[in-house]
Image 1 (cartoon, rainbow, N blue to C red):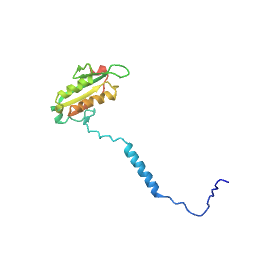
Image 2 (cartoon, helix red, strand yellow):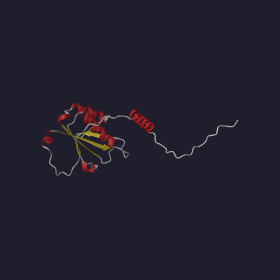
Image 3 (cartoon, helix red, strand yellow):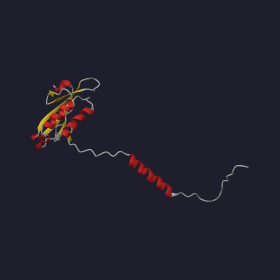
Image 4 (tube, one colour):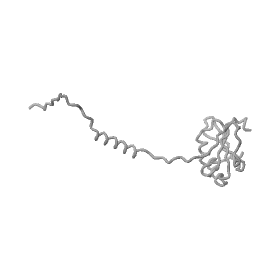
Length: 153
């Protein structure tokens, strides 16, 4: 007995595109990506004044805020450790935890936080200071232009 022989039909018929299976596949892909994606909450707006050229006057409400200065200085060439000082006082131990607790103890709604430091301080350290300021509900954060050690003293 011979195997089955398939014959190919040659004809003038046109091929038609079936839409129903395509729509099913599109909806399956849509559902897959909706389920597989991770939904992140929107980041809160954080008002920050970047260093400018000094030509714009300060708003009047700024002068009434308590000025607090945070200085970040690299302790090694790789930039893995930093020294954090708050108003000139070097914070020991875990400096970022100490900074957070001190900012929380102060009245953040009446505070203007100025962040400055070495030009090559890693962004993660600056972000940690911003997290501490956000937790303390600091009203205004200002970034000072980075300067070398000789210029800051």
